[in-house]
Length: 95
Image (tube, rainbow, N blue to C red; front, side, top):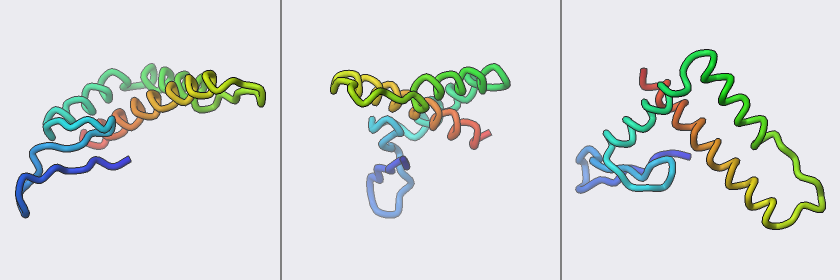
């Protein structure tokens, strides 16, 4: 998912963006969040934590008889983990 700049006038640098989480905030606030996530999940322990989160959400397979609620619950978890991983990636790229 790409960030969408909110430009106040044509040709001006954007002061706000629609963030990875679809919330409008200042460019600095968005960059600060990404940096925060990169710091929290830095190093080998951070990578291990991200791997664990990915395994229990994105690599999890529900049985064919899973209810609609179970599917929605897992998809919400997957979305949250994907958002965390994107923020970490963006934060690491800025370093």
